[in-house]
Length: 398
Image (cartoon, one colour):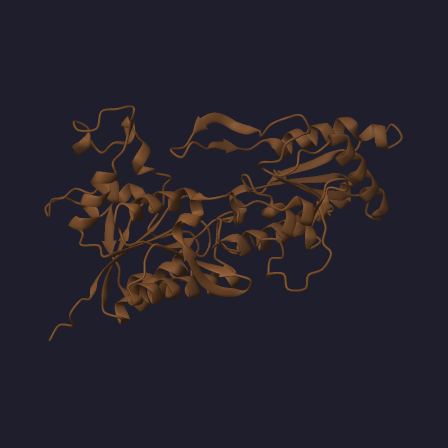
């Protein structure tokens, strides 16, 4: 006799990929199936549920897939997301992105396809929706929750800037890779007695530059939360270089860092559907200025620079131990809530303990580095008074 299905759970991954997404999908799926639920994966973030065609004869394989233990076990230990991802925002969908079968209905420059999303979730028989994403992906999940969808969300972003939680999936692997790659490049910086400038991801928060610097990977870091003086940075790096027997020094530059009197540097003017232009290029500008100013602090002699943008190297590949364990726990936490009939929640880590908070926290105050507490604005490096009773990643608690 076939086992009665309790209901259907849908999972999606939105925004940028990070290591740890597949372990989360695996944890949710295995637990849900054991508890008697059917599980489907919505493909390409919110795009899959927007583009779904309500016709049993239609090919929707690019929009959703029924998940099994075999499928998730195969991918569960790898990086990225096998469900794929996108930066689709159904409430502000450009005309060019409206699915062909809906173009006669939605003809504005930007269109709200939330009704389509709700109809398609109903068509699939979705009882609970578990989105895994950053504040952009989850902000639309809040919209759906307010429309009556039962949502339990999981925070993901290597920038670690989702409000309400100390930890987002992908952050630990990002920090681990940043430290490893910085240490790898030290040999070249030392061999040529140069400044080493590494631009790291982070958008509007400086955690990805701060933690590796605090761990000893760099001498200095510049972050979005404080506009830095380039003369001060040059002088500090020259001091560090002169104190180093190998005659080099290292600075981590957050992609959102800003010169004193300046603004963020963008790769181009193009914006995604959430209104974000792509950051990038500040590391190269810092490198140029360091090279130009170096004679001023080095008896008239120029110091050359090694400039490297770490970029996707820190978000690709397999997850580290923490990004294997935390996603497993988050997935099970989400199922705990589903089994209790609880929804409208975000699963979180707070002060070293797993918990859950109201999902609308993600649309509240932005999560950034507390510079008064953790950043020395004169020395351009992390600072602290005591680690006692701080969370695992020191400065990541709200």
